[in-house]
Image (cartoon, rainbow, N blue to C red; front, side, top):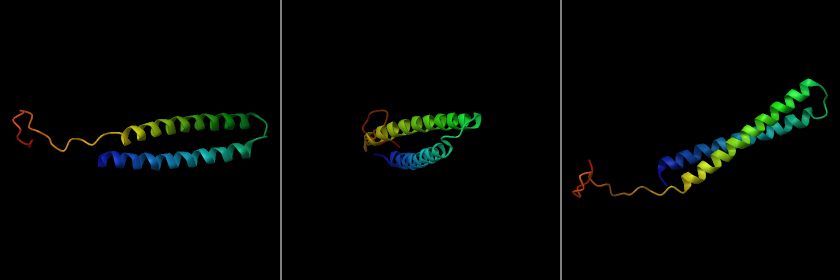
Length: 90
């Protein structure tokens, strides 16, 4: 795995942590407003559900991206000159 892939995976992992914290916060908000009546509750409930859906989508995307980056093979250490004469590339 390349250094760039490792940095990308670390960034993705950090973002996943933030998204999971946001999802937990949304769950607490929904529990707090549950049982209230009126349009305010309905709007807040819909907003939380939409945001939760967006978070879940991003978590799925980042998880798949991280898996793809983890499985990326190392580049070949030997890079030849494009002319194919066996000399190292400059």
